[in-house]
Image 1: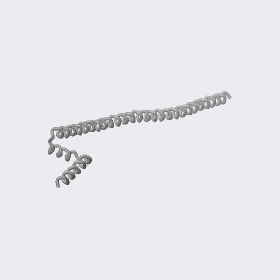
Image 2 (image 1 turned 30 degrees about the vertical axis):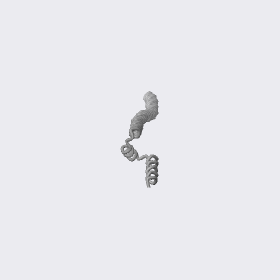
Image 3 (image 1 turned 30 degrees about the horizontal axis):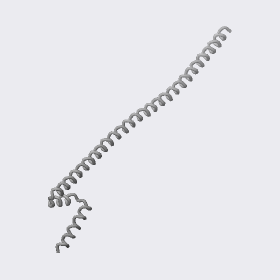
Length: 131
């Protein structure tokens, strides 16, 4: 009877130990699953954050590149206006000094259709008057 009581007691202790181990394993598995989800979430948020930083850097670089290009285009237009203005002033000066050969050469080089048309019509009228 004593042996039977010890065996029963040992069996109860073993069952309780097995139940504790199973409970521990179950809690560990739940904990591991939660940690896996948290790690995946952290990884995803880290990738999103990295992408955001890279995207902002790309936009900043795009803005800088466009600004440089636009500055060059604006500079070219300013220089073109200055060049045209200088050419116009030199044509006017040639006209003021009555240097007609120089003036006509400058008009032909300027490729200004309106002035060329007026000049050719004037030449035609002068030729007709001369006949």
